[in-house]
Each structure stands twice: as C-alpha cells, then as structure tokens.
Image (cartoon, rainbow, N blue to C red; front, top):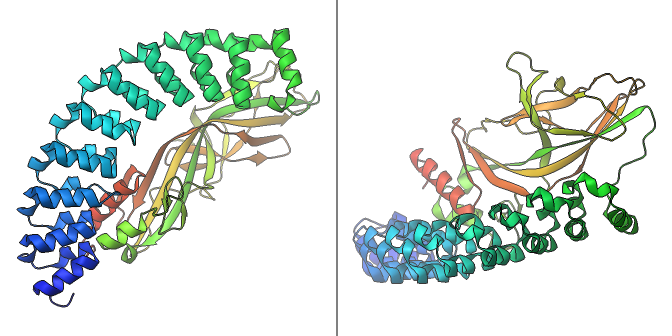
Length: 471
C-alpha cells in the first residue's frame, strides 16, 4: 500500500492479504471493519490488531474460524481464551494445537477434548489431570491414536480395556502399558499382530512364547531380534522359520578365519538446508515457505519443495570421544553381540577420527543474510554387521578394531567402513523419534525446536524481529 493512513487503500490491501494490517497506521488497527476484513482473509492477522479488538469476540471468532493451519487464539485477549465457544471453534478448525493457548479452566472441559480427539488423540497431553483419569476420555483418545496412552493416568495404563484399544490402534503403544499388562498374552498378541516390532516392549516371559513370537515375526521379520534365544532350540519354532526363510535375518556364511558380530545402537539422521532471510522476512512469506498446502507428506515444506526428513545422512552414534585423545572413545553407546562360534572380546574404543567429512557439524554459522536449518531425528534399533578377517580369530585373544568416525554435536558417529581387516556395514534400522530442527543464524545464534512448522515460524520470526530484519 502506498498510504497506510488511507482507509480505503488499507481496506483493499487487507482484503487481498490480511497480514497487510501489520503496515496500517495505528488508528486503522482499531477500525473494526478493517480488522474484520483482515482476519477473514488470514486469521494470523489478529496479531496486528489493536489490543481493544483482540478482546472483541466477533473479531476473534472470525480469526479462529478462518485459519486451519496456525492458531490465532494465541493472539486473543486472555478473557477470550476462557471462552468455551471460541476455544471449541478453534479446536475444530485448527486441531489440538489450539489447546496450547486455551485457559487452564477449559483444559478440564470434557466436551472440548472429545471434539479435539476427532482429529488428534495426542490432545490428551494438554488435558487436566482429572480428564487423564477419565476412562471415557482416555478411550476416545487412544482409539484415535494408540500412542496417546502415554498421557493417560497410571491407573488407566493398568486397565486392560483401555490398553487393548490402544495397542489395536498402534501396537507400539504397549510401551506405555503397565508392566502387568506387558505380561498379558492377549494384550501382547494384539500388539504384535498390529506391529510385530512391538515385541520389544513385551515382558521377557512372552519373548519366549513361540505363538507370540511367530505372530510378531510374521508381521515384521525384524521382531526376531527381540525373541528369546531359547526358541532356537524349539522344534516347532525351527520348523516355522525353515518354512519361512524370507523372515530370517540373513547372516552370510563365514569361514574359520572370520569373526561375525552384530553391533546395535541408534542412528543419528540429518538433513541440512540453507535459506535466504529475504525469502522469509515477512509474515506472509514465512507462512507460505513453511507450509504444506497439498498435505504431501511428513514435514513437507513448500519453500524447499520436499520432505525435510527424506533421504537423510545417517550415522551410528558410537560413543563419546575422549577429551584427551581425539582417536579414543571415553564411553561406548552400542551393544556388541558375537556369533555363537566365538568367545572373544571386541574392543572398539580405538577409532579413526577423520574430522568433518560428509556429516553436518554444529554449531555452524551461515554466511551473512542466510539461515541454516539442520533437521535431525534418531532411528532406534540400528543394526550393523561387523565381519572381522582375523587369521588368529581362534586363539582366544581380544580383538581390537578401529572404526572410522566423525565428530558431531551428539558424540562420535560411525559410517560404513571396509578395510583389509574388517567390514562394518548397516543392515537395518527401526522406528524413529525426536524429530527436531536446529536453526542457525548468521550472527552465531542457534535455536533448537520441534520441527512442527508452527514452532519453526515462531522461532525464526521472533528472532528476525529482534534483529530488525522482519518487515
């Protein structure tokens, strides 16, 4: 707009882009017609309204009704965050994230949460403790998302009906069940039939149960990693595996001069992207950049044109490098399991630190005018095969190997390594968790936050405002 004091010009501007209200003269930010037009075009524009209109129920209702993606309730006056009608509409429009901004008094409201659970069982996380003890409420949450069992009161984690509903929706919800139900054959069977990998959360006694294990392995062959070794001697289980060779973890033949081991731990998985400040230095630009208008996938980002966690660089988190020796681990974060033919100790504490190579290094400072986004997550149950070519492998001595590592902000990370003495290669990984992003600015400032688009927008915009580069 050319003249931010011209009412007609401002009104026309906000009808086209609600966030143009940011540049209107202060007197016009008090104009109800202008502000109404702005929030109807974009609910986020409520941020720029005069405080008097943030108390106006009609204005706030229009804002929370319009915006499905963000949570305009954040900008509403405290009095309206207590208004059940406003909050109910906000929850129905933009989901459980609106509950972050609702008054505590409404976090005890059963009707509001029942509405929230239609979209997101994880809304249970925001509920008052009294609702987390309510069987009807918790049942509705876990039926929508089994993992919501995590937020239920401990008393309901012992309730077989609740837990059964949770594991039928997501077998891995077994992780949050009471220990007594992890011993319940019916519960565990339901869990592994939904996701065989849920066997890892079962009581040890049921990891010996061939019926349970066979059901788990049928659903996911990787579940075999969690079966008790005693089943190897069970004829019926052996017959089952022999009739289903595709389910068996393939271990290559080894000769008498080779030692085979499995190293298990967690992989650190990372992707990095550099963006220009000028591309996200207004409300309109940043919301458009961090959007997924077509719902194209997990963390799809329009401005990058891809899913930010797709095809990451991943490395095994091997351990912590010594402060006194960059080629020595002071602690080891993996488990080593030898094949049954050898009784040896394998020492991996001596490493070859190759410094920064392909794996991203933090903290990092981008060039002036740019922002670095480092998205990362942890992939659990990473399985690596270690094959050692050792002529004296049968002598009973300890074996030392030197795996190549790179330093990272989470310790020493190891890549596939092949030498004349050994081969170290990734075989498989399990489920992922802790999807985070580290935002690095050109002045050295770093912010770590959840990788939800809303959280990234908030973190970047607040900091760019403090730098006076957010228009």
